[in-house]
Length: 275
Image 1 (cartoon, helix red, strand yellow):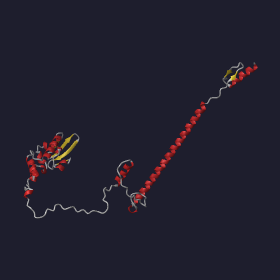
Image 2 (cartoon, helix red, strand yellow):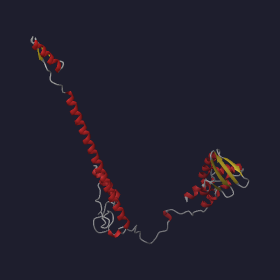
Image 3 (cartoon, one colour):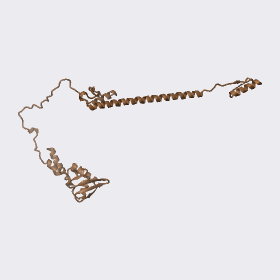
Image 4 (cartoon, helix red, strand yellow):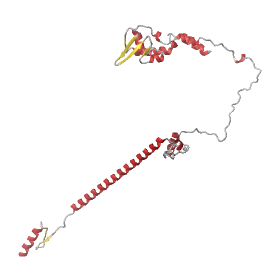
């Protein structure tokens, strides 16, 4: 009763023929309608434009291309601009459910007032109170945790491996099909197309493994060739760094001399012998 009285007083104080929320929405859309330009064809239809955007408004059918007017029952910004060009009253194009008269009709029915508890008639029945709830207790230990989905159990297990504190329930039994060998179903729920898919997956895995082996062998061969080249380069560098032993010639006067070449040594020895 208090709610009805408060609502009736609020409705009577509304200055607009529409509800307060609808009036605010109309005012906000009127501000947006200023940027649009409407052109009439003389039959209640308007072409409303703004830059590269263009919509069609039909005031007689109360429809717009944006469909906001049809869904809400309140003229959109395009319709408001078209109504302003036609010099019509905007309130005539709003749905009746948003009017002040409709709100009054909703709350015009009165509720009869009631007396307090002191004036209630006394009953001869005993006050037994609220009866207890009859709950049938099931056998066994009651469950405290809900049944988790498979994805949640897998995530909890991953967190536990990483050092998380979240405990995970053991995963359910994994069924393996005897026909295709895939996990997740058994022979009774086998799909003939799944066998072909399993074989294709098996071939793809074998091919991927073979490619990995070929790439590994190729890398090993390249590493061996590189090692051989480095070893040969080191050997060549060490052989080039070696120099022949120094040859020293003893002269008759007791001095030593390093000959320039083998021919010069022989000529010098021959000249010394002749002397």
